[in-house]
Structure formats: C-alpha cells, structure tokens
Amino acid sequence: MLKENIKQLRKLKGLSQEELAIKLNVVRQTISKWEQGLSVPDAEMLISISEVFETPVSTLLGENISESKVDDLKSISEKLEIINLQLSQRKNQRRKIIHWLLILLCVITIIIFIILFLLNGPYLNWDYTNPEKAVLGVAFHSFEWLFVRIAPIILIISIVGIVLTRKKD
Image (cartoon, rainbow, N blue to C red; front, side, top):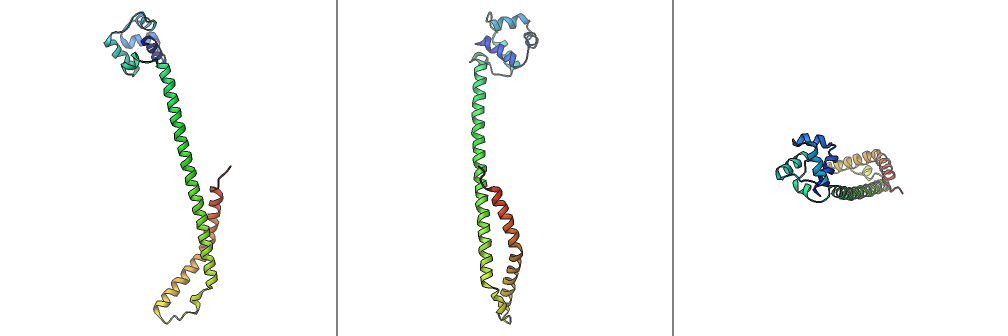
C-alpha cells in the first residue's frame, strides 16, 4: 500500500519523480524503488514525505489513497445534497409563511374597510363640547382618513406579494 500511496500522492500534487526526489534530497531512482515496492523509506524519511505531501504518516501507511479520495468526494457530495435539500425546505417554508401572512393582511384590511363603511362616520353626530369625546372623535376621524388613503396601497402590495409567493408547479 505504501508504494501505491506514494505514487498517488505524488501524482495528486503534480510532482514528477525527479521533483519529489529534489524535495526529499534523494535521487530519482530512490523514489522509483519506493513506488515499485523494491525498497521502503525509513521512519525519518516517512515523516519528510508526509510533510511534502501535507498528509499524516498514517495515511501513507494506511488505505489506498484513490479509494479514500473517492469515498471522501462521495460523502461530501451526500452532505451537500442534504444541505441543499434543507435550504430548499426552509425557503419553501418561509415562502408559505409570507404567502399566508399577506393573505391575512388582505383579509384584515378588507374587514376594517367594511366596518368603517358600515359605521358611516358615527363621530359626525357626536357632541364635541365634551373634551374627551372631541379627542376620541378626532382620533377616530384621523384613523379613518389615514386608513382610507393607505388601504388601497396595502391591498395592491399584498395582492402582488400573494401572486409572487404562490407555489409554482
């Protein structure tokens, strides 16, 4: 396994046997013998090789590099797929919440508008000599005046939002 791992890591780093030999201060034939399994590096040389390849010595001595790289890519791919699925679900959940909140805003706006229409300005017949009633009448009139002007804008924006957040099949 060591011979295959040295060869695989050297190729993954894009190094020739000569370039690796220069980094390790050995001759190219030594690298060739390691990769052919004719000899093995000593403990100190294993540490130097692991530093050049930026990998632990246990990886050099352990399982086949190409298999572990494929497994790593597969597990990373599976994790990314799970993350993408979770993000998609969260986005759909937010879209649904916003959609229903906009529908609720439309319904509340229409209900308030109907109530104001049915009340037909009851404050118009009030006796404004009483200061508390005068303040209440002015507040009611201000609310009605502001609501009648803002309600159409709220409805238009809400309806546009409902259309934009509906589920597209």
